[in-house]
Length: 236
Length: 236
Ligand SMILES: [Ca+2]
Ligand SMILES: [Ca+2]
Ligand SMILES: [Mg+2]
Ligand SMILES: [Mg+2]
Image 1 (cartoon, each protein chain N blue to C red):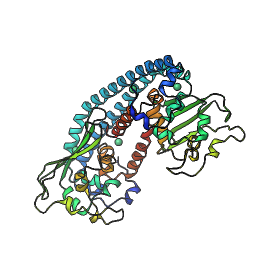
Image 2 (image 1 turned 120 degrees about the vertical axis):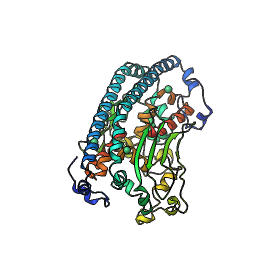
Image 3 (image 1 turned 135 degrees about the vertical axis):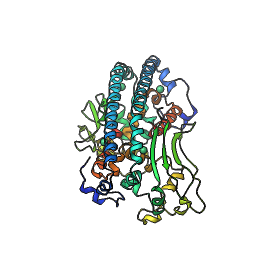
Image 4 (image 1 turned 90 degrees about the horizontal axis):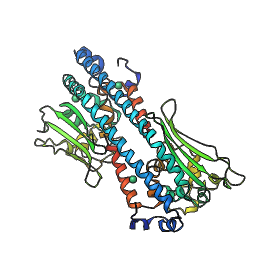
């Protein structure tokens, strides 16, 4: 707590610089605050660890249900695709070319990494299809070694002449017709815009927790959920 | 899970509407998915409750330290004011009039309500000052009965001719001089912009957890913290 970084020079003038404060006789008070703060920091670390252990426990407890759910969902044709089309944000990013390929989407799985601040990965499992050879396409959001958010995604092995990311790489615009949208595969391969990724968040926070509601088009339910999530920014 | 809301009519056409799916013989699979989903929902509720109990436990454990910290901080003149001026976002909202009043800011306290999604309250305790009669000014962020985020703030009892919110209610603009900024008291009394309240979040998420770092102007530390928080959006 005692190093005085050069970066401080770029800041607005301080009324109480450290040295002044020390000269003015507040050393004891500042040391007392530092000691208390260290105790608080320790308690915060303990709380984070305890919450992480709860999350880990429930991730284990939920695993059998998620596995069963995946098996049951796989028996319903176009389950995830239908859910995607029923989500207002996701539907807005699907173009005509996407539809042909997303009919082969067999399963979706969101892995939330347990370590706090570490990220999540979305797996899209496809059945054999005329567009690409991969069985699973994964897009992962994590922090790099400097703590900056990055995204990485599977390289799609397109079959000759079937690259849907190229076909749909057209100009952005809200009112463009469905077949002119940039589309799902453009989003999937674009790892530049990792910070405000509405599509990934809609999959992780809406579709993954309640896929049946989206499949069934229970929109009222969905809007309530979205309202609640906006409120989350005020959660303790 | 069986009501089909009218709102569904406004959605893009579904490939599998519920009735079709039922007619096509997927009733059993959908019921199975619903049963599994109910188990998942129950586990999610249990996880939320358990995390809430951890947060409650640590709020109790931290209380003595926060009380001690407040007492120690109160002995250092202009501690919170200095911290505010050392925070890049907060400093950018302080104008010349504010400075006169914020010198009387004796204490800051952030209450995070324990109930998930419920909100938080920031108390600003002032010593007797030439500007207003209140001892504590509080601004609270919560959800109303419809689950919409709202803000409420104490009505400031200005002394005659001393209304700093009026004096500073000038036009917004990034490069305006310090004395022409809308200022702290304008922010405090403005409860319309509760959804993206940078100032409240800077106080709650930066200043409150590490006031000494801000008092001391340990900016490098601060920038690291802000980077980490941006990464939080990807936390599990
Ligand atoms: Ca610290
Ligand atoms: Ca539910
Ligand atoms: Mg699945
Ligand atoms: Mg205090």
